[in-house]
Image (cartoon, rainbow, N blue to C red; front, side, top):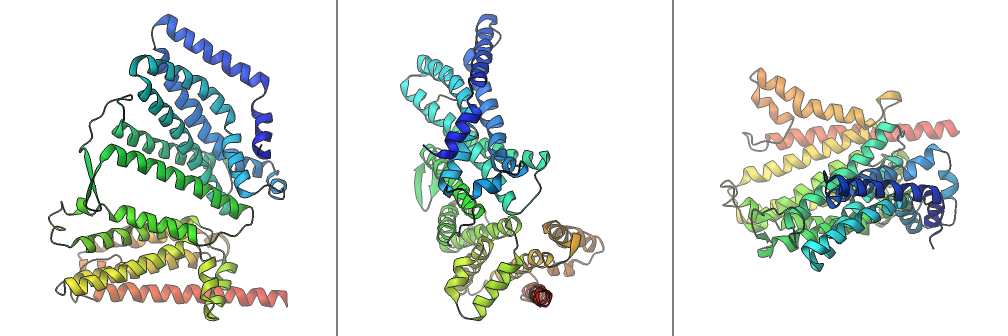
Length: 453
């Protein structure tokens, strides 16, 4: 048995706690049955969500950060446990008491479901309830591991935010399952359509939603495993993240048929729409990951050394996720620009708009890196977020109020006259930010060398 899981079994499933859970739940169900105010099945569902989803998400969120707070995490990291053993042990070991209580509630639910809805609906209900618990707990664990990598403090409020991440994931799983409603066992809900157009195929909406839920749950577990590897000082190769990007690009690009319902998009080709969806997805991941990942100046200087030395394989092998996402965005955007040039030579404005989007993306990523080179309280992502909020919202609002709408091209992508004005402004800012950031990284490296000398 997994040593970490076994340790948590000893700590969580003590005879006193198990007896307390059984007695409390038994009294609750008997009270519901005798008073008639609540159905035992309805109460069991409510208690399952409270114990497994809400309470379980908090226990998963605190499974690692609690060890850090108690100063026991370093000794655990030095043990012989691998990342997989540690991840599964933390995920299911820290929540085993919640699953014990949830199993009692689930038994009541399944008995009621079998008596009223039949065997198939009961099996599907069991799958759903287990899945929503795993989704909530794994998303909370993933959020906490990301925070651990950023070396954040772990106050009660921050732990609550990790828990909220799991609750949001569980809410998404609930709505997907409720919409799919494969056996009518949950609250019936009519889908807007019985078929989902995806990559030119009309797929059954319920099957598509359930398969999507299973796949994204699997990716969440993979994310937990990779974050645990990093926390145990193991190196993650680029292939898993690259595979995730490829999957997400293909998944989102398949929904091009939804865009053609917009009259503005109806005259664009399928290939262009799919490339645009993939590029937008990758740009979104670039922003998310450059915010979440720690910006290690030592790593950046090492990557610069590898790049200058022509060791591209080492650079790509150690590149952070936001860098890989940025490269994917640039690659797909270039393909889109070329496609537009071939299929729509008259749409020069669209090419300029894409180039300006890449310029602002480059500038924004550079701002995040730049703020990591500042000393003291200026260092960090919060300052970068404030600057971007000012650039995209506050300053444009002031300029718009003053009637200087022509100056808005300096702050976010838009069509301009001349057509390349916004793109030139975006890339000028991107180059300035990149030069300053690289210069400050080099300056900190020289300072470190001088200090050692």
